[in-house]
Length: 389
Image (cartoon, rainbow, N blue to C red):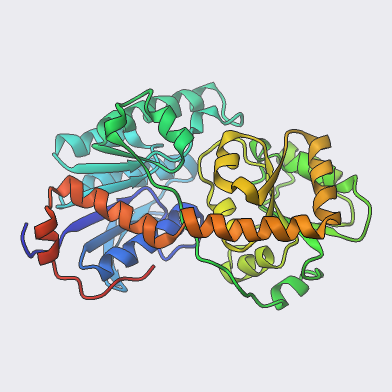
């Protein structure tokens, strides 16, 4: 491999351009970055249809090959069908396979049989989430083990995740690469005011509405406060889910429940103009929403666990239960000096630990490592630009 383009395939997301979550945003960032540095990049994109009439089609987007896979199933079955079709196609292509998440890792055994090189970002410890029943937990636990051993290299996005993976594979097979975020230094006020909010006069939570994200205790803690501040809870709510119903019942008139908002400019503005960001996550590694809050200069009120303490550091004050959450909120609402200090610490932490350029270069280095490309050969590879980060 002298001057020919190195090749990478990105599996495990719903596809790009990003419109869903952290993995999709990362996949878009990395794909654009590598394409700009001379890589041949393919990204698999899930296309849900009523009936499959054309299993696979490809198109080019900003120098990246988008490989669309049609699936006619729904829910988890659709994800598994998509993952399997991606693996079948990737096994016939050259280059490194970067897999984001391990929920369908059982299929990676086929990639290994076909002698593909595999890097897997192992994400969080999914089988520990309380929302799953015994069958789902067993599935995730087995796939975590399979993913750990089927992959050549494992990426942990947090030191605690790396420690966990070290119970599955030797440390030499694991690298730690966090998530990234772009600094936010300004944002329009219009998206904030359109929801009846005043800049700097509300707290915000951006998360899936699930028990392990502590949304109900956050709402209950806020409703015990006095004053004219508001709480914005972004996330899909369903009247068919008891936990969601409990949140609606607990909320008072000062709690704004706009549902899920996928327009990134709106979410960025809501985050930037918040007085503080609330992060109740208890399971996972370096959560993208928390990193983005740091990059926006948000003071953080976070659940007290090793994941959040490492990620947020001095930018956060921490809570363990509803009562302590209420106490932390009161601090955030009353102490302007504390809010400013935490905001400054947030920007420093984001700049030092979560720069996209550092994250993307680290992934590129891992891919080159699996391809066996030497430093001298890397110089010979045509890089038309510095890439987009």
